[in-house]
Structure formats: structure tokens, C-alpha cells
Length: 263
Image 1: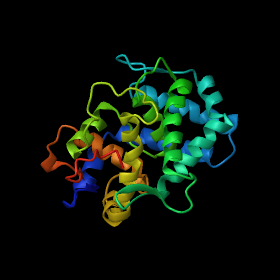
Image 2: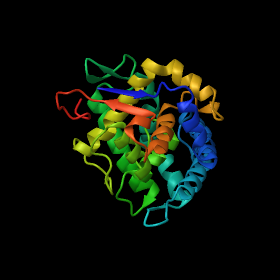
Image 3: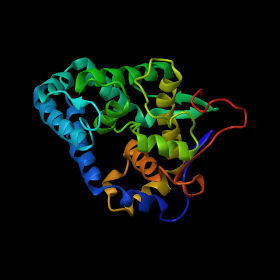
Image 4: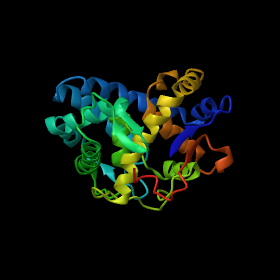
């Protein structure tokens, strides 16, 4: 099972450049504050500006509109981000990015990972998505905005909004393109799909990083270099509605019939 990106010259660069410039700016605005927050002990001093920026960006990205959940007050988001437990989970998830791998067709963690096992990573990721939903949003039932929050805070994984889910379907990953992607329970198929994707992305990066880094450097947004979750978020968003022949991100599953997420 392999996730790959297009080898067509300029395809990745063109996809990144075609993405909304304001969305690019929003990501960098929050990510800079998130780095400072994750690099220090949790406090109101680092959580407050991050909470304000996160609320503003999520609102610009659709929170509170067309039936989407609205953000909690900034004071409540600040309180959540100031929690040592919540901060620790975000730190571990952000730090795990370079340790995710696929070995022998199975998900694996390279030496030095902040998680003792793949199942521990899975539990933390699903716990964090659900706690983010409760702490940062009002009346939320779907994964979209918790995952957007997690993307902005850690850069770990693309957010499963409708565009990205459509892009995943074009890439060849089944079972993600549906009207609503509800908050998942641990161990469910929907949870497994979320947990498996970062491993495929890391494995892809490990094989193709020179080409991907070169394409990002040639784009109008070279600061995306190393932001693997966001790079794939953008590429998958852009390819929604394309045909598999013109897709930038593609997935090849084995003929055995094993679900792509059950690894």
C-alpha cells in the first residue's frame, strides 16, 4: 500500500500556488504562535494570543456558518490551551511526525517516538480530536473543525473537510467521501482511517522528500517546507473533483482486499 505524489514537473508547485493565498496566510499566522506555545510550558501568556488567532482563522474558514459549529469564547479556548494535559498531547502529536513509518506493510514507530506503541498514538490522536471538539467548539459533532484546529496547532494531519475527503477519494482511499464524518469512537473504522493517514504521508515523504521539497521551494510558499500535514492538506483539497489520471496525490492498495486503513 503506497501513497505517492505526481512526478509531472511543476504539478505540486502549481497545486500549491493555486490554493487560496489568504488560507496560506492564515495557516502561517496561527502556526507561528503554535510553535511558541508548544515550545514552552503551557501558560496564559502563550495560550491567549494563540487562542485569539485560532478563533479568528477557524471563523474565516467557516466556523459558525452554514450549520458549522461556532468557536467557544476566546477565554474558554485560552483556558483549554493552558491545560497541561491538553498541551502535552499536542506536543507529543507534533513531535511524532518524524517517527511515523510503515514497515513490512504495517504501521510502525521509529526509535525515539514520544509514543510507546502505534495504539498509544491512535488513542492520543482520537482523544485529542474529541477533546478539541469539546473544548474549542460549540455544538460540534463532526471531525472537520477539530481536525482543522489540530492541523493549525500541530501540522500533523490534513483536516477531513469535504474538499479534502473528496481529494482522498480521487487518490483512491475508500470510505472517506461522505456527507458527514462524525467524531469517531476509538477502534472504529472511521477512527482507523484518521489514524492511518499520517503514517502513509510520512512514508511518502521519506521516499520522495527531495522532489517534494524542491517543488515547495519553487512555489510561492517556500515556508511550507517541512509542513507535511499542511502540504498534503493543500494538495488533497486542490485535487477534489479531478480524475484519478490528473490527481497530484495517488494511492495504490494491494490486491489482497485488505482495507487501506487496517494496517
